[in-house]
Image 1: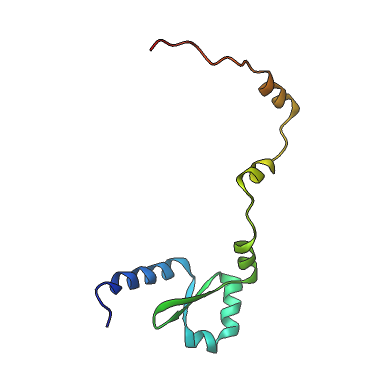
Image 2 (image 1 turned 180 degrees about the horizontal axis):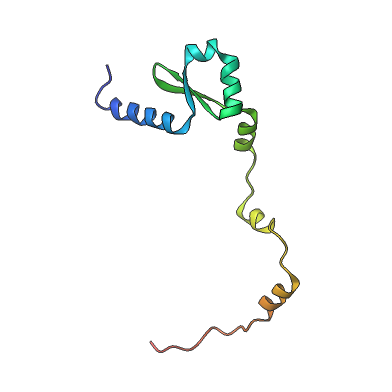
Length: 106
């Protein structure tokens, strides 16, 4: 029997699994139908495996795993990897006035 403190967590886990995975498998079913589990992970997306009704594992395709584990570029690398600016735009930016704007009275 779950305590009062465990019930909300169990509900959140169940909702999270149902919202994020195309199918959830009980551990025994996953073991017995392993080939189908792998095929579905490849074709349909991540598959959740539960143990006693609680999330225990997630089976991903190799492609999805590679996408999750590849290194992400730093913000600077991301900005520098963009397309080159046209020369006329660079010249226009560099030739703009260096004034600080209009004077205001405070």
